[in-house]
Length: 207
Image (tube, rainbow, N blue to C red):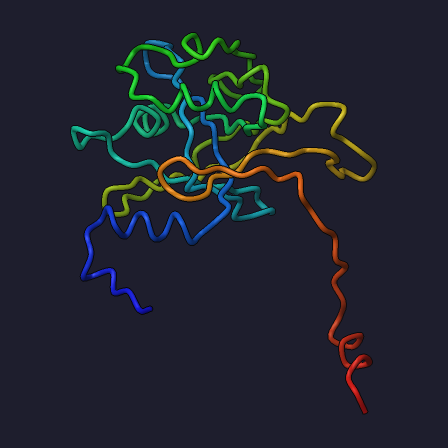
């Protein structure tokens, strides 16, 4: 089947792209407004995009009134945020934080979560998370009705029990987002296949 997005509504196209580009990691973002209120919200248009420097990005849509969401406003105003990663025991709290809380009311308290001070930036991280990344804003770009946020990671926080030799992270299993509106997946079912060079591939070819 061929589907021309120009012939469909934005809602229908959203369903298609979010059901096909899967699984997507979840950026559980903490930011702070000018009054010091901590905002916490999940975003699944998210990924790492660079290692030197360490860049990640995520995309924030508009709220129902057509205005930028609190996360985007806070980051643009203050230039800092934390990406917390969601493991299965935190799913219910993450789901609560996705609700449309009014501006100025922190989702942390509603989700029974404790903040943990960050090391290099003002916004706190979520204490219960096994991994968090402190970020400073690199840039934003308005893409239609979404604000693309690019941040540079300036500090990692990783639970001690996850860290192995040579910076390997072992046993970390964050959940992923699948299809809209409410499908998710676990990342515990994995397989490991070694990569090989072109020369090695050539050796395997029949003479």
